[in-house]
Length: 260
Image (tube, rainbow, N blue to C red):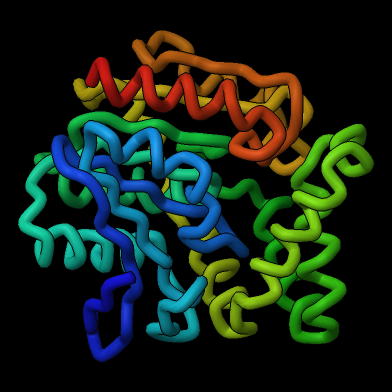
């Protein structure tokens, strides 16, 4: 684990392997440990960078709101420190929002993009209301909010099948500081719609979606790539493809990286 001080905030990241760069960005209530299963294979022929996003993992908070642009600027600072000029970006959920913000701010760095259980669209009004409710709920009962949030990320049948794995994810999530959770919810709530990037950018793109995702409606999110060259990879489970469809997700990602 390496540390970079970004705007007086300690950012923790891992840089492993040699070759073309691959940047892995975790989601809300996660940290870079979510990629542990993927790193050994991806780092065989690539330089893999994983980063604890602002307010998550071992990285500190920058303020009351962590906008996706703030996160993207921080990622850019890490890549500048490592002298990386081009990379494939893979973002899970909120990590996908950060990757899209990065693509808009620093297009010259983009070699390829995978949005995993993520979307290019901004929050609907209903979703914004739900974010506000979530902020109130986590302030009132932090532990219950985190545990319930994690359970809802898995398809119903997997909640009984993957009990041990889900418990591990919950324990990791409970290490996220309260302020980090609030800042992320505020940041996701105000994020821009970036669907245009799926249509106008020329680098290779992939969208991985779960057909039973309780967070992102599958049908609503498939049509964002209508009339684009974005490759769609559907899985039959929930929001956590890297756990629910572990082997298949790793293969899809490894193949994409190899070809890009």
